[in-house]
Every structure is written in structure tokens, then in C-alpha cells.
Amino acid sequence: MSFVYFTDRDLGKRFPESLKSGGLTVERHGDHFAPDTADEIWLETVGRRGWIALTHDRRIRYKPNERDAVTRHGVALLVIVGAAPFPDLARAFVTSLPVIEHFLRRHQPPFIAKVYRPTPAETARRSTAPGRIELWYAP
Image (cartoon, rainbow, N blue to C red):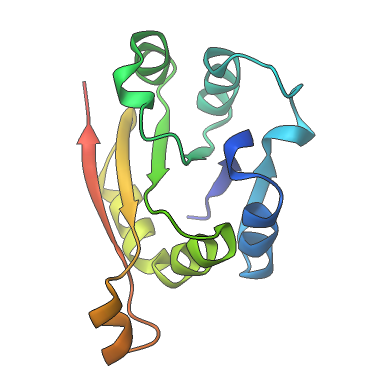
């Protein structure tokens, strides 16, 4: 099963380009929506198309209208966690892809999960160490 990843506007342009360079199929927010499109609107489209939504907005779970849109539209939403430059976050995402896609095959949307980079200690031991993914919200 191949996945299509949708990057929210808060991930900018470099993050999705890095994912594409890593061989992923990526749809950018800016290619489908105006910059000021409400999250509930793009969440509906992403859910209908069966895409995997990626965001850097850690507060999305606490915004009732957005959390409810995830549930209502059957969205698989991955929150990219970390205060690092987007190219570093994208590289960690691609390195963690086997772990992420295993999670996606085992969990039925709707849900919100957090994607973490590997720790510096893990990366020091092995440069290709994957990060981890944790279920954060499932109705």
C-alpha cells in the first residue's frame, strides 16, 4: 500500500520537497488551497481523498473544531514534533518511514499521532536510526 502525504501550510515548502526527494508522494497545502483556508476545510478534503495529513501544529488536538474535523472526516493526522529546521525534520521523517507506515497500516483513521525524531544518542549510535510514532488521540 502506498500512501499520499499532505503537508499543512505550517510545514512550508522545504519540508514537502525533502519528502519528495526521499521518494514519497506528497501534496502541498499551497497546491490545493489558499493560504488562509481554514483547517476544517483542508481536513475534509484530505479525509475524503484518503491522504495522510502532516502538520507541525502541536495544538491541533486542543482545538475542538479541528479535532472534530479529524474525527468527522476520517483523517489520519501526523503531528511532526520537534524544534529543528524543517530539512532536519523531513530527513528524520524519511528515515522513520518504515516505522510510520507500519503504524499507518495498523491503525484505522480517524486519529492523531505524534512523530518524533530519534534522540541524539540514538543517532550517534546509528545515523539511520528511526524516530518513533505514538497515538495521541483516537475518538
